[in-house]
Length: 469
Image (cartoon, rainbow, N blue to C red):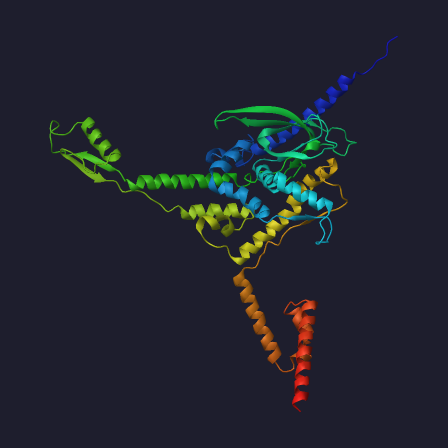
């Protein structure tokens, strides 16, 4: 008698094979899509594209993390594209409050304020935001004092936050996923593997340390997600081709002007001179090398005619401006905002307002729900921060009126008020109180104060008039 029992290892093997098949299908579909980029004029019988623009122009069909990271480190506009939204969001920091009472600081607010000061929270959140945008995602590792637990164990309770470490995609891999469809975290990472770089006393000498971390100790950050919540869209992906074009134009124009500054010369031997009277090629080479590379500004030549070559120099500004316009449009960054600091020009009011609206949208739809709140909630869940039912993230107003603008507005409002007061029968059309509130933007308290002052003045005038009689 024998019972047929399916080993557990076979079941796990089936799940692993299914996961690998799904991953392989995803990779193949994305590879096939990338392979079609830039191709056109497909043959009706062969099915082969007759034109491959990406291959001809040297574009990458499947860019890697290093493709984006290298451009961020070395290309000026690429760094601006990545940094501009991050700097704009975290330049004016939010306040976290438990209630609307500003006079009394709650226990949660005290603990949060101390944590921000001791652990430089805003600094690390901004760094994580910046690093996550270079690749498809980034993480924040929360190092806490929870006894002797290993990092790959679930985070339950902790006494305090010891450190915050941001890591980019190149240092992080997901080594285990949640495959149980009955779990809330189905399809999300369970265990991360981090390759931390450890630097020695010299900058060039580094070593790496690999360790596994449970998801409860990590805040996963990904912007521009399409298919899932894990892999976002690198900020440079949409403009990578244009960045390469811009690099070719700027680098090519530099080479063009370098060569154009020294146009070159044609050395022609006099045909009327015998071969024995002309200089040897070696002597000519020595004279030319001394003229080009040394400080000599003359050539010692015998029966050799010099004719300068006309340089071919073109203005690259129109081509570069077109590419910058396309980059600004693709990233929804106003062109004046993108280039303002480099060109020393101020952005227009319309551009600034559009940019501030974009940043406000990013603060509320991405930075707060995907970075700040998960960070706070994770610390409340483990006891580092007092757990409260609700808190409010108060972002400051981005459109701060300058002193000049405030003075201009005040002058116009004062002029309008003077015209209203001097206009006969104006109160019959718009009552004075309504005018102050709707067109002068006064509050009820301010209007009440003015009415009280007017009543006091009228009362004093009546009393003074009665005394004189």
